[in-house]
Each structure stands twice: as C-alpha cells, then as structure tokens.
Image (cartoon, rainbow, N blue to C red; front, side, top):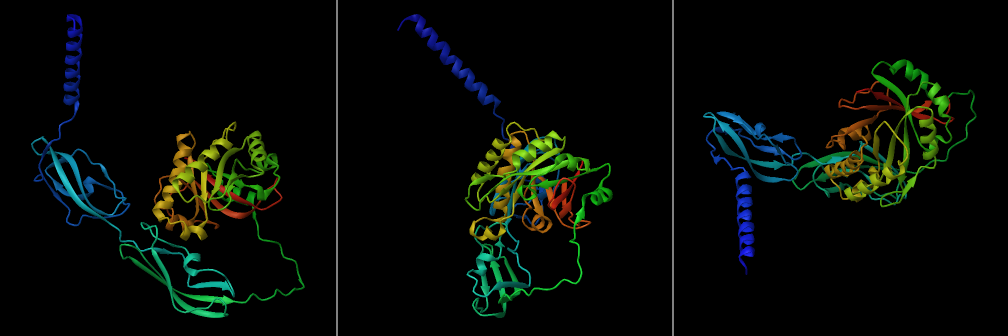
Length: 404
C-alpha cells in the first residue's frame, strides 16, 4: 500500500473517531438518581385510559419537576416512570414513580327494564343486547333465568356482564315474548296533520351571531333544489358521501352525492361530508377514510368530514372494547386530518356519553329536543329529523353549527 493511501485511511479513521465522540457528547447525560427530594401520593392506582401526568402523583417536592410527561395508561399493570426534577440546590436529579394501572369500571349493558321479541324469533339475547367493556374485547355476558322464545309470555330475567378485572354489572329486566296482532283498519273521523319542524321556526328560535342553521342530506331526500334551500335561510349542508354495506361490506357511493355537492357548492352553501361506517378495525377505518378522500377529489369543502358509526346491533360480534371502537374512529379521523380536512364524530347524546368517550375530535351531536342537556362540548347539533324546508319534498334533519 503506498504512502498516499495510508494517509487517506488515517484521515478517514480520525474522522470516524471525531464524529463518534461528537455523537457521544451530544447524548444528554441522565441526571443522578435521587428519590429523597420528593414525596409521592399514597394511593397510586390509576384508572385505565385516564389522563395522568407525573405531577399528579407527587404530593410534595423540594424543587420542581422538569419532565412532567403524560403517562401511558392504556395497559393494565404496574409501571415504573422515571422523570427529571430540579432539587432545592438547583441540581437536576432523576426521580421514580411507581404506579399501577387498574380497571374499576363495570361493563356496559345497553338494556332497559323491558325487552320485547316476537314469538319464534331466532336470536340469542346475549348477542342481540349490546354488552361492552371499556377494556376487554370479550367480557363475559350471560342471561340468568328461564325463557322460551317460542312461547308467548313475560319472563323475569337478569343480564350479567363481568370483565377480566372482575367488575360486574347486572340488569334485571322483563322479556316480553309476544304474538303480533293483526292491524285493524280504522275509519278516520278527522284528519290530523303530521308533526313536523319548520326550518324557518328553527331559524327564528336558534339563529344568532354565534350560530348558523343548515341541514344534512342523503339519497333519502331525493332531488333537492339548493337555490330554494339557500333562499329559505340555510347556510350549510352536510352531505352523505356514501356508506358501507354492513360489516366487511363494500363501500357504496350515495347515488345523489355528486349532484348534491355540485349544486350545494354552486349555490354558495358551506359543505361538509359524512360517511356511514360499519368499520370493525383500525385498518378498515383507514381504508374507508382513503375511499372518502378519493370521492372528494375536485371538490372544495369548508366544513368537517364526519365519521358516522351506528351499527351497535353488531358490536358484540366485533370483539372490540369501547376504547377499541374509539380507536377505530380515531384511525378514520386522523387519516382525514392528515390530508388537510377537519374530522368530526357523529353520535346521539346517550351513545356519546357511554361509548364515544375516548376521542379528541369535534362532536356532531344528535339529540331531538328543543333544548339539549348534553353537557360536553359539541360544534354541531342535529336537533330534529322531521324538518321541512323549501326545495326538499321529503322530511330532513336540521342542524345548528356553532361558530368558533
């Protein structure tokens, strides 16, 4: 090997050494371990999925916490969390918090005290009645008591659900097995008008400097004259882009989607979108979000894209926890937001309170009442499904949008 090659190799070797030393010097040194400068709270049991930071578990400290990081509470069990704090002498030290993530929440049984089925119904009560757990994918759900779906009568039963942490929920209910009676024709002595909600009444009662009034539509409204809708006072419309044909089913474009979005935009209405989903996994939800994004190519919308999931009758067969279902929604909505749109979750008041409680997205509330008592935040309120407005020959949902 000649002298020049040796010099080059020496230079390369020295360069590698210098780079390595530089990397080593850049790596932050872990402060000295010292657990004497603080006191922890006595009970450090933390509920699963709770939002907890290091400071929440420290009772007192001679100094201040420097790394008040959020603790991952998505798995049950004992955890050791290291953090950095500055002691009373101004020196950085490492502290340790030991805690236990526990599940003390009872499973959810979606059942009133009276449940009716027809004689001869081919169903399983355990499968038909929603039974879910915040943590377990498969809580133990069972019905205690004797009944016969082929014999008319009332049966007094108890539905019991138990999770892996031995949390138990019980609901006593009456099972009514009935024979449908033939409908007798009646001669109407006087006509009665159907109960409807006039759009202009909603505008009068709810329109102010902080709100806008609009509608949401799908194929069920058929052809729509959006000019008349706009002239009636609507400023926005939520349009169904499509739906999934059941669990593991295909995605189907709403047959009125294209004409609805084109005419709504043409008439200067603000437009948002919703997709009716049966997703049972994060992968499925991401796939659906990408399908929705593809349908929106060429259209410019200003309102959110909503995830509409209402297939609760199929939930027991999906092997999902309540938290897992929220992650399904999060997968859809995060994919939407990564592509520059705002995401929103749709749900009724009761399901929002009991099911949709582990997400961080805007809420489109469905609650058919004159004054909602839903006490969490929401950006849109679907207050009725029996609305009438010029430009639509069918009943329609009416919505209030709250300005941010």
